[in-house]
Length: 404
Image 1 (cartoon, helix red, strand yellow):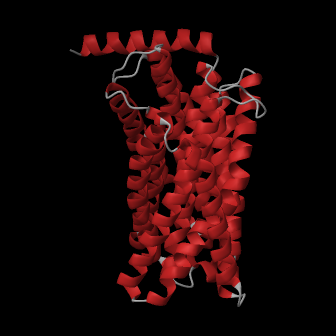
Image 2 (cartoon, rainbow, N blue to C red):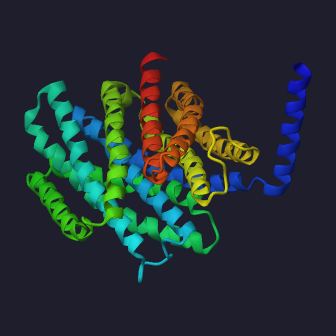
């Protein structure tokens, strides 16, 4: 048995050696470049840390923040996946003017999903607030804040996603590796800024709640008017139906992140360095899983890989490369968290080491199962994987902060 094991390890080493010569650590370099944008998540973290008293002012304000990040990231992830696959398959031309019917359809489908899910996320947090503290007067404002935050964020992030995808494709770079990691960070910064603006309007300006409600109402009306022409389109309905199942489930899971953070509000006030790295931490882990899932779903769509759970030697080699590039950034986050004490560093590194194997397995299983059922993996893999990674990391972080 020992001889067989040694023989297998020898063959694996030889395979990896040949892959190193052929690939030259291409995925490591691509991922290292793509994940570098996650450092921008530190900007979002610094914004939150600078406004920490306001963010921790009530249970709903801290509960809604991870949901806002998760929702924007998940819908952006679905759009990035559909955009990347569409570019690879020729369904989308890399331009805005004269864009294809398919591009217009998925663009408006994502806007429609944003409207529905922003309302649902606000409603879920409002109900949780009522259950926890009985603050019924806040319910209406929570929904308006959720809608206004997403409305202001999406008008910035979706056009940027398209521009990045088009530019990457035209330069023969892989949009599957580059688009979502870059845009998840940009989305975090934009969403954080818009959420802080919404909270300032709510708590400081007497007319703030009215302004938030007006923004939410205008966005809702605009989306419904633009999307209604596609309500009879089967592709539009399928896109919304498939993605909404995963995204609604992700909202439910995302609530766990909010509840976990609300339970450690006092600890977060003690460790602002952990708050600073939090958006970058969840970004990088989500990007790791989404990159692996997006590569796999594209290959399944192209027919260039087998639909099986066990990865090929090439896929295993690529996984190791992307995991190592991810680890590099977690070491950076750990050093930053060290400014608040050694405990912060331990929490950050354990979050990655405990979460990454689970996220990797889940993203591959989701891609495989949806493909076998004839569903579009782009509608399921990224939103579910991203939400799971966000929630898992948040829960592990909260647990470690309470127990270590």
